[in-house]
Image 1 (cartoon, rainbow, N blue to C red):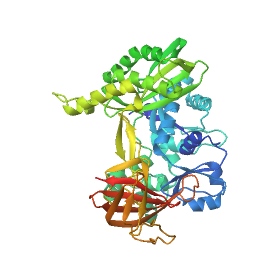
Image 2: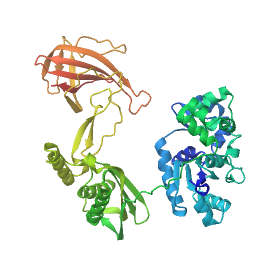
Image 3: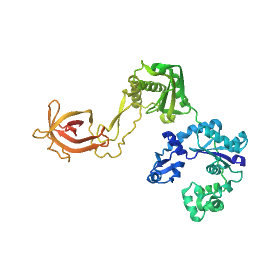
Image 4: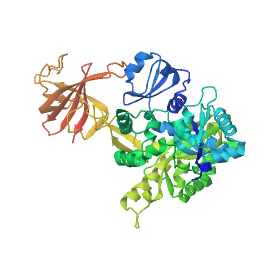
Length: 518
């Protein structure tokens, strides 16, 4: 790489993780904000740092220094998602950006300097572009990515631009602290050897560094000497795979909209296949005549076919209106957008040479039935966590991936001992439980029974003698919420016919059959 190609311009967005999370939570950057990862501060903005908050602090210590700080959980994926539109907008003005990480991008300085009439003019132009995107930024230009990034981070407050002359990268780096090396082992070891600056590290011979610190140490030694051979590789912007249909005039009927999306659905799936991709999660967005918008994400156990895409459009509209397909919508639909929320390589979903047998037939039949009766007309049962059998089962529409709200693998203190009943009544059945003398069985505040359960009496008066029973197992959950708080005593009992029952005694003293062990 010649000297001209080694010149790099770096655009740095200070505190980008905090900026991205603040925008997602609609917070102002002027407020103190910290991001917490594994109980410690991952990032803090300038107002928080002004109060003494530092990266690596425990959350409680940070809050003690700044009581008004906003505490947000750090989400790594949010950084990338929020920066993608920014990067796309930058590429519209200056092509050839090389993303280093969210909030930090580089471009070869030679091209932009020639176009805008010099490196300083190019730096000012890049700042103007960032300001147009409402993006706090600084620009550094130097020989190599390492020096250019540090130049951007050490720009004067009033200029936000720093240009290191060609050939001066080593002199610029020399007084900087050794802690700027992104290697915890070297940062810990070098100060103990008396090496506290990048210049002191650069004064060592390359042979001695390679022999003592290995290949990784040799790489950082070359960077400290201003010799950065890394090139800025322009990103290839992803092809837009969204399908958009505008209706003029806007349509009110669901069947008209679904029919109008058939060709777009075919093209949408075909465009994905052209890139050897299939869609496993589909986002359907609607825009009304007056500009109002709504969207919904649909999941698929395998991948979407064109007819299934049209079905999801129709079901989305029916869910919004609460009406059938022959009635008008609440507002006419002017635009429909299909976007692949999640894609997989097509090879992961290819059918076998002779198909997949019964599994493929089941999927085909259930999908056709679902297309006739609606999205929630065909459901499958999935297992969740909970303390009662009714809480541990949830019904998921066919094709949707279950969203686990309560992890079944975690311990659930107070749950009914296994095995679980094979039949769980959606509505518990009332009954009476009597002792051997015909008196109702009760449980006092200490969990003691008034007498041993001996007989089950149904609503019809049918009586079943009990041969065995176990319990009680007390249940006292959500005591902090009066609307959902529940207290009960659970029992297992076996009658003379060999049938086993799961019984519950509520706070009102009423007995219920919650399930049966078949």
